[in-house]
Image (tube, rainbow, N blue to C red; front, side):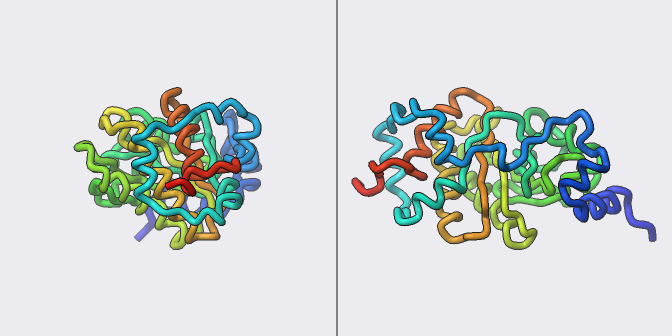
Length: 253
């Protein structure tokens, strides 16, 4: 029995290097942002010195106190996280994360943008994955995207912090099984699902910090932001979870 076209295309694309994809014309008329074009957090703070004026509020310190970090890794890990203000479909990384619906059908927002940029084979593969429960994650090829893979995760619609935490945790598990060394996350559940932006950022950063402390092979976790409020929140909270200055809030808790 012949393989479906999406499977043939997926295998072909996965076997191409980024350079070979470019030579094959896959990125024609597309803007591609390579990893070396995205500042690590440490460099970002140097270029944006005013962010030191953004101070966490009391609720931030309370939420941050729920995790323990190994401050001896601060310097190294500040080079392994990034804020990216732009289009997640342009990132040439190991995987981008899609804020999907449980049917894994192309929808609006980030979900729709990823499907449009990847092409029709992405939906064809998604149709074979059997949907995705809230908090879980499924992986597919990236097809016409610069990203090698798309990880689809379904955020909570009921404000469940635990389910949102599972979205990040389960998405990161593909690091080992699929040799993903760079990954970009959108803001999961903060759009039409109504999850509070600030708490969502705490959850994302806490999961990233705890993961990076235990997984040397992940080169970069990128938080892809679109709304100005999310940029401000992440610029504030990254100073807690990935401090790059002498003052470390963690040491005072």
